[in-house]
Image 1 (cartoon, rainbow over the protein chains, first blue to last red):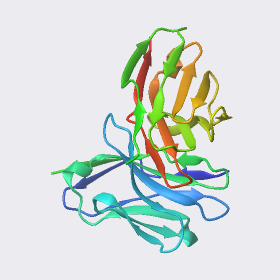
Image 2: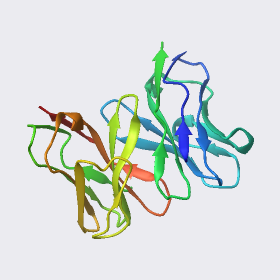
Image 3: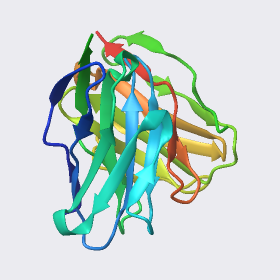
Image 4: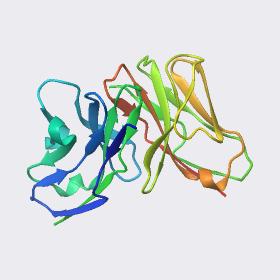
Length: 112
Length: 111
């Protein structure tokens, strides 16, 4: 079955530190992959997306993600985290069913 | 920018009530979706629609129905609300795999 897995439920980093949020997918073919961010009480905002081509994609707010087919991963990265990045992050993918499937999310906490 | 508007941010309803959650998008998108979000479970797809008067069941359709009489409006209906339907409900619209645009969500409490 198609699935998206985020192995880390909760991550804590210091402000200014680098960040990597993990995402693994299980799809037969190359999926379309997305990262969304959700601030408390808000809807989801699209950070970036991968459809094909260059495996390193740039998004908003200084985020990037790298698609690695060999590892079935699409990890989100940011070189220097800001306190305003504290939120919940969701990885999601679309396979041949045309439905967007979400991971269970990673909550990011940022310490000053 | 595409805007997806959910009519209520917070709702409190009684067990057994019929509940309507409304969602409107303003960019003529074909595809619309309803998800519920619960801690530790992420977002789960309830129903979706690829066209007017068309609907498809998602992963957890039990206890819900939907209506899409106009392209811009997609309504989620709880026929008889139960406490286990207390959740955050998120509506989204999409234009051909360009990424989903989400509304701000409706937090429903059933008492």
